[in-house]
Image (cartoon, rainbow, N blue to C red; front, top):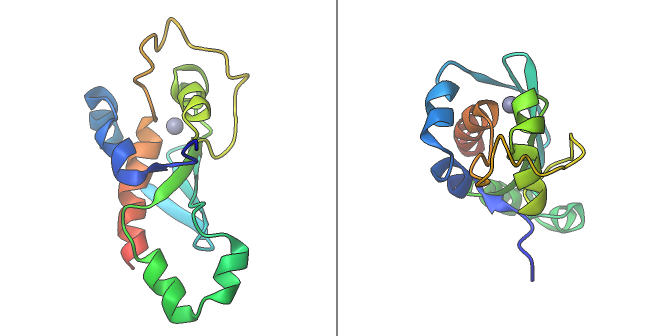
Length: 140
Ligand SMILES: [Zn+2]
């Protein structure tokens, strides 16, 4: 079976160092969350994170305490997207689509053979900053 998301820690760990260091200039500000869909403002862009492991049907059947416990797990599976051009054209949108961690498609998904020939740019600096923040927000 194909994996339908990647974990927060996997994405954070496998982000190229250059993107990690650029992310330090950014603060992810949580705008909206229902525990499943998380929307952050990062600089001029919008980062969306979806935590797809718990369906609404299942959530309805769980007690408040059980839901709270599930949502307190820090290293969750996530789907992500960012509205910046780097995400669209430099690799992340294509890599997210082909590796099943895309929250939504934002480009025509053509393979960025020049800008990311080895498919290493898995996320942009905005998503990196957001996932670090999300880990904190998940605990609270
Ligand atoms: Zn971005």
